[in-house]
View 1 (cartoon, rainbow, N blue to C red):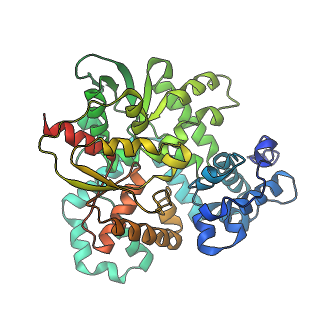
View 2 (view 1 turned 90 degrees about the horizontal axis):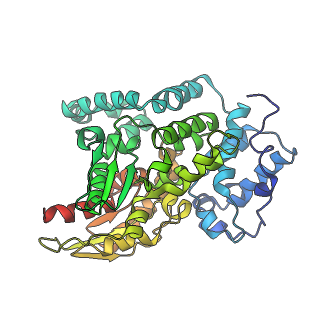
View 3 (view 1 turned 30 degrees about the horizontal axis):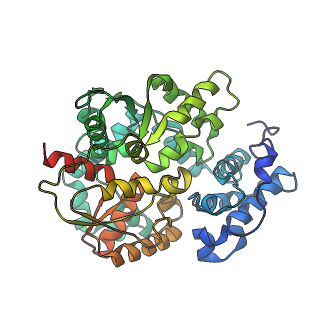
Length: 434
């Protein structure tokens, strides 16, 4: 990148100067709560960003590390009385850090080139990796390695990462869902479903459930087999240009004028997907379509409440005590808070128990549990403590990263509790009565 271009200096200055330094965000910030250090707070980070925008500070390694220590949970945006757009500042600051090169090393550059530049720019490559991991698990090799004691001689961090390895689904979304699914009964809406990246590998069953639920509620559902990453992983990790390119690909594949809604069932992806117009603000070819795209994108809970749900019959419904964990980007980024609770309360046999600190980050935060394992583990322990206190049989949440993180935490604690997406519970209720 040319040195004359700066993601913070070239940003609309009104966004940078919105922060009033009132401190109301401090109690909501998990990293500040844990350390009580100003630089680990939204206010402190914005002060660093503003210093760069004002040309009083050049990006340093300390600045870059601080931006990556931030979870990006956006709880500060919910608390902020001034409406500071921390989401955009956060992404711009990480892009600034990457453009400066202060964190660059051969190992880091190779990892980023492989993951962000190669693996997640073509999801056929990700599926190839998923097939290899599935084969490793289905042949029992993973179980054999875990039982052999080999992991005990590996560095502790590698053993920890192996323990977090998720189970790949037996089939991908394209094997479970038709490109076009007709509605049950009269067609009310025409919608598209985004199948995602990790969501497709690890929770393709949630994509199937999403399509089934939409069809039960009068939607014709379009689910193309060869989809693209939404770009949130790239935007959140400073790869602004790649995020823009992926946004264009999605707009081309799903022309927003052709759909009543474009449905996402992943809280983190949805928060990013609703801001393509900001990402493509300087692209006259795509801007108008991006603005319509932003209006069309709906989280599955949000859309179901909007159109109304056919109530599932109570026949055979198990009695379930359920608690709900708010995905950070679903509640703070998308402001979708009441809708998942409304959906859960509509299920027969369900008692919903409110989770203490339901909107406090679980520590997943994209890849934060990989890059900042110590802080992530502290947050997960806090979350599991609260889950255990509810006595619930099921914990529901609307984001794949949260599902994995919470499931790992409950398993490590020895809790016999199911982790599930709310839409899957609704799909199960429909299936019980055929």
